[in-house]
Amino acid sequence: MKHDASRTIRAIQWLTFFLADVQTGLGPFLAAYLAANGWNPARVGYALTFGGLVTVATQTPAGAIIDAAHHKRLLVAVSLSVLVIGAVLLMGHLSFIEVYAAQFLIGGAGAFLAPAVAAITLGVVGAASFDRLFGKIQGFNSAGNVATALLVACISYHFGYRMIFAATALLAIPAAIALSQIDPKKIDYARARGGAGDQTRVTNESFSLLSRDRVLLAFLAAVFLFHAANAAMLPELGELLSKDNPKAAGPFMSACVIVTQLVISLSAAWIGKRAATHGRKHLLLIGFGILPIRGVLYTLTHATSLLIAIQLLDGVANAIFVIVSILVIKDRTAGTGRFNVAAGALATMVGIGASVSNTIGGILIQRFSFRVSFLGLSALAVCAFALLWMTIPETLPTKSSEMLPPGSGSRLHVHFAQSDSIARPPQLDPNRGGQA
Figure 1: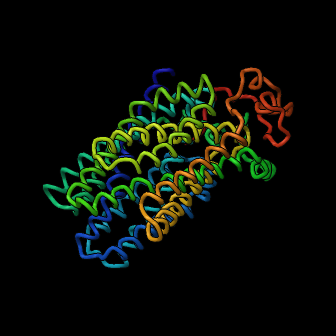
Figure 2: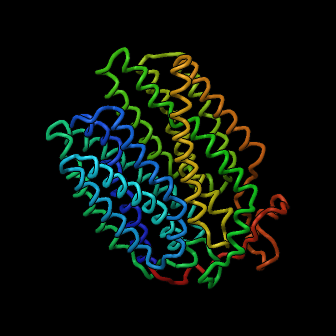
Figure 3: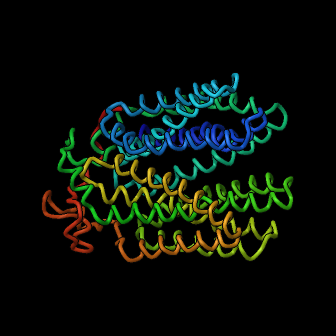
């Protein structure tokens, strides 16, 4: 039994690695591909924005579907197939209809993949072990991003941009193999949605409790502000550098992306362990606090080596956010069966914040300067830090709170005695099986 569980966990890790491969190939390189095929910057921007809007609009409904789905492996397989169809469409004649159809498929499918894998992981290991394992999984995700960035750069240089999408489709094969190695009997349906006991359905009351959780709502607001400050910083830096040295901007951006992903890959497992033993809030404060410092540092130098060094801070902040934010969602939704809905709402705030960031940054650059834009985004980051510090308590449950009988109160009641907390039932029996 233990050997089978370990095999399933390894399969989840490799599935995450290869899914990062597939999605990276369909992401940052699409703009260059369209531009190389005669699309002007405005048309490229509209197409990319459309794909992003599809993902943002789909995230929360996708979470509800993942919560309701008993066959989560099938949901991942279908989403992966849809991504492959989108990649194949981009290999053809790049008409308006084909590009937008591909973006619709890619954006919609992307909203399901990472949340579904997180749900499968929660269903396999349970809440008690999720923290540590999720950090390791994010390490695999970042390693996949680095590997794909290098592979795609090599393919595009030797064979052209079109072959990137052929490689993306081929990389779906090892992802499908890894998915097939996940034992469906190890996925507990109730546990995978943050449910309790033998819960097979979730009442409207649990959703109402979730929507009234002021801590959760404040955290989502802080996430929005964080990404409203964060998303535009690196693209603006690349834009600034390209004005002076266009040839150096591309390699610099690639180096920054790789540095960020390497930091996440190397630190993810440690962050997961640290969050499990010492709590979430101090890590989140570090991640949120780094962002305004980074924005100010961008205004002080344009030396390439120093800018790449500053990008290490971005890696630390993103590693903390990617891992710890999901753990906060898990803590706040324990026992409600709404883990994936809340995770979808988190992803929606990330997407909306990123869109707003580019708008705010662009306006500040147009009306003032790059320096004012970086400082303005840093001010937003300070607001995000202040909101997190003042309104979000520690959410790591204590052992005593996990032993509370049903209906006696929540884990967060033990920490803070807050009337707005959601009631948390005891942990599930980890040996209980379920459906895929």
